[in-house]
Length: 155
Image (cartoon, rainbow, N blue to C red):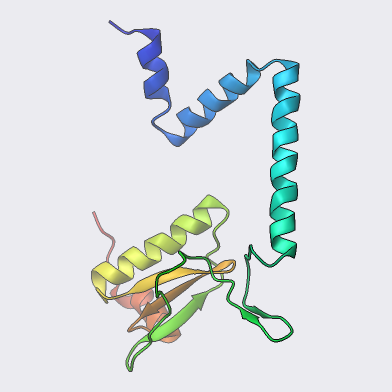
């Protein structure tokens, strides 16, 4: 009952299975197809470099130009996601939590989840350049105390 076409479909449901499927598919490409794919990647790279030079694409810390301040935080456009820190709320920059590698990214999400579940249901987080920023009732010392004294592992 195990058809090979359905096996391929189920192989791709995990990250590792999807990666293996992509590698298998890429090994089936002819030399011409590989060169065309390489050229497409080079074209995309040049396009992003032009966008960066023109100021249309930003990634990193906030920077200022001649008369223009450019916000380089990662996020959706059109929404007001600026931190409205009110009294009793703190913004903590977690510079050890970066978007890459994956383990560091997952660490940031875990911190946000645990703080939101166990300490502050209104906690928010986001990426500013290459690090994670947590907004909650906890300041830096409070966050340390939470993980050292109050944190309880979830089942």
